[in-house]
Length: 385
Image 1 (spheres, one colour):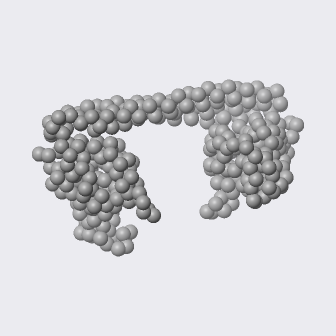
Image 2 (image 1 turned 90 degrees about the vertical axis):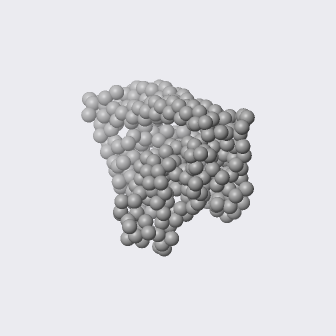
Image 3 (image 1 turned 120 degrees about the horizontal axis):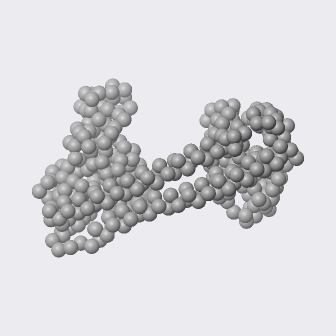
């Protein structure tokens, strides 16, 4: 511990200031109004009256979200208002700058310590009595202000860099989507409107006949079993799996060949990907085995990606959005000659690869910025800044 720093109990330097006040006509803060890990306020400053009891707070408080502490919801309000009783207003005394407390609550070590001592299995809440008993590193006020100044300036720069990286990531994806949609909007000579079954050798739903579906004897064998989540999380190609069928599982299902185009028709509808290996899938997935004389596998998958919003719209109107085989009975899609399909796929594959490369760069940058934040917070309260 750095010279001049003291170790106090949190309850020695701040109090839980629970001033209850129902139906207050002031700005309201609920847990949904605090962004996790950043402390950014997502709500409105318009006065809001709520039916339940609330806690009043001012610019002197730090607001701490006690429900599910791992969500790390902490706010430094710059206004007077009232908050949900799932939020604790903490009021520092004259020895503690509230911004210093705010950063201490945000750091990983504090989040983990509070989460480990929370109570309630399904809806864990911070045990405030325990939290107020935690050890708290307290430097002199000038040192607190110096550390807060460094963190404020650095975190502002990190936030700007993250916003730029996120925007660049979004732009890269939008450029690909725009080009994809343009390809199928500008149909050239020789393009023909056709149904999927017209260009397929096999077109049908997957199978999972056995009930219950989670019977242990169906699983743990050598046959890959793909579900809607695997298709949603794939990037055009399914290259891995987390579940397998046994011989009993295969007997009540169907093994589809590598290269089958998978279309989800329940849960996350109209998601698509191509099997990178032979696999089974349930009846919540449609399989398309392309006829190579009529269509390229990659072309069909890109085509369905482009028409995703249209297909999803066809599934709306029921209590749970879904589509089925009949959805495609009257749907026709634009197909050029196979040679042109290959050219289109080659160009889209190249653009998709470049998009993934850029996405990986921006994702790594975002991860590095987040790691820098965590490192700075650790250094700040170890007396290393």
